[in-house]
Image (cartoon, rainbow, N blue to C red; front, side):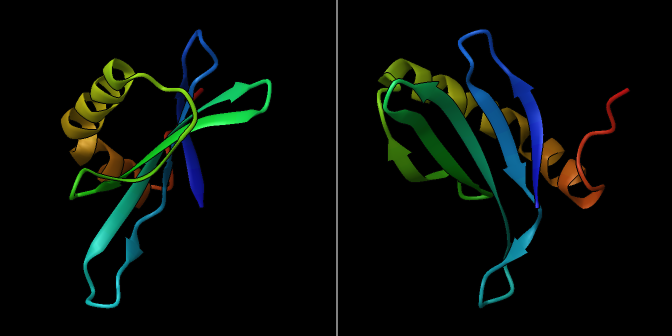
Length: 91
């Protein structure tokens, strides 16, 4: 399952996965930033709790990637909380 967090004015959409388990039992979440382009999408995907980039494709700048990393690091506890709760409950 994938849950939407928000959409930025440049059309970048932030989504996060449900909680998944690796073979060793470790829980993880994937947080994706995607922006439509003429030829597909700019994409960067982080894995929590390691904060590693597991996918990067397209034209996001290094500055944008750093901003996304800060968002992921600051909000990690919330991503896990909302993944456990089945996403954000928006009115």
